[in-house]
Image 1 (cartoon, rainbow, N blue to C red):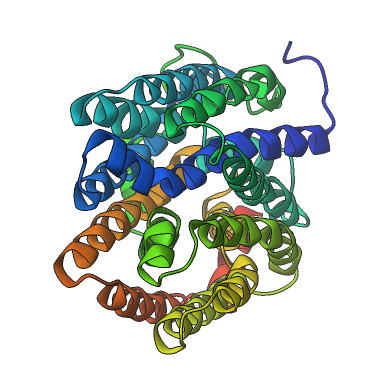
Image 2 (spheres, rainbow, N blue to C red):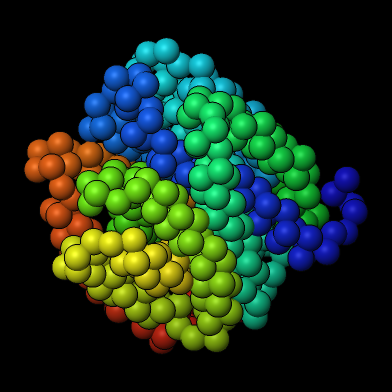
Amino acid sequence: MQNIKINPWWVVAAAALILVCNMGIRQSTGLMLPAISLDLSIPMATLGFGFGVQNLIWGAVSPIAGMMAERFGTPRVLLAGGVIYAAGLLLAAQAESSAMFFAGNAILIGVGVGATTYPIVLAAVGRHFGDRNRTLALGIASAGGSLGQFVYAMLHGWLAPLVEWSQIYTVYAASSLLILLLAGVLRERRDDAAVPGQPGSGLSWQAIREAFGNRDYQLLNIGFFVCGVHIAFLSVHLAGFVASCGLPVAVASDSLALIGLVNVVGVIGVGWAGDRWHKPWLLTLIYWLRACLIMMLLLLPPSSTLFYIFSVLMGMLWLSTVPLTSGTVAQIFGGRNLASLFGFVMFSHQVGAFLGSWWGGLVFQWYGNYDLALILSAALGLLAAAVHLPMTPARMRRYSEAAA
C-alpha cells in the first residue's frame, strides 16, 4: 500500500477532517459543564480538575503516540486512538457517578485525543512538503481543528435544547468514527515509512536529550505552555464565565463557534505568513494580542456584543500558534521526527491546559468570578510574547543551512 503515490494535498484534507473531529468534540464538551454539574452533582471545581487531568493525559500521550507513529506507522496509531476516543465518550455518556464520568471523560478521552491530535497528523502532513510551502500546508490542516470547533459548537447549540448532555456525548462518539475511516490516507511516504519492529526506527533517547538541550526548543515549549493555558481556560470555562455575567448560555456556544469559524481564516493566513516571514516573531505578535484581548474582557462591561467582538478578534489568533510552532520545530530539526518532537511541545501545551482548566474552576469557587484567572492569563500572554524574541532570523537561517 505504501507503493501507491498519493497527492500531498489529499493528506492535508484528511488531516484537516481528522482534526475537525478531534478538536471539535474536545473543545465543545466544556459547554456542557453546567448541565453535567447539575445532573451528576459534581462541583464545578471538580469538573474543572477532571478536564485538567484530561488535558494532562492528552499531553503525556502525544509524544508517546508520536514515537509509536514513527516506528509503527501513523494509520495504526490513529486507528487505536480513534477507538479509545469513541469509547471514552460512550462511557462518559453512560456515567451515573463522578468516578465513572472521570474514567471516561478524563482518562479515555485524554488518551484518545492525545493519539489523534496535532503532532500525529501534522507530522504526516509535514513529511510531504518542503520548507517552501510546509507552513501553509500545516496551517490548512490545522484549520480543521478550528472548523471542528465551529461545527461542534453549532451542533451543541442545536442539540442542547432538545436532548440531554449524555445524548450529545453519544452523537459525538458516533461522529468520531470518521477518524477511523481517514486514518489510512495519512500513511507515510515510502522513503519516510518506519519499518515495524525494526530497532532504531523512530526517535532515539539521545536525540530527545539533544532536542531538550536546544535553547530555542526550550523557548518553544514555554510559549506553547502558555497557549495551553489560554485555550483550555477559555474553552472549558467560557460557559461559566458567560453565566457569571448574567448572559444567556447561548452566548457561550455562539462565541465558541465564532472563534472556530474565524480561526479557519486566521490559521490559514498565519500558515501563509509563516512561509514568508519570521515565524517566532509572528508568535510574539499573536501572544501579545491575546494578552490585550483577555484584558479587554476584564476591563469592559460584559455584554453579548463584547463577547462576539472578542470572539472575532480572538478567532484570528486562537489556534494560529500551531502551524507556526510546529513549523519552527520542523525548521530546527527537520520533518522526519516531527511527530515525537512536536509531541513533547504539545505536552508542554497540555500541562498549561491542565492549569488553565483547574485554576479557572478554583478561582471561581474561591472568589465567585474569573477576574484573577483573566489577569494571570494576560500576564502569561506577555511572557510568551517575550520568550520568542531571542529566536532571531539569523538563528533560524543557521538551522536551515545546517539541514541543507
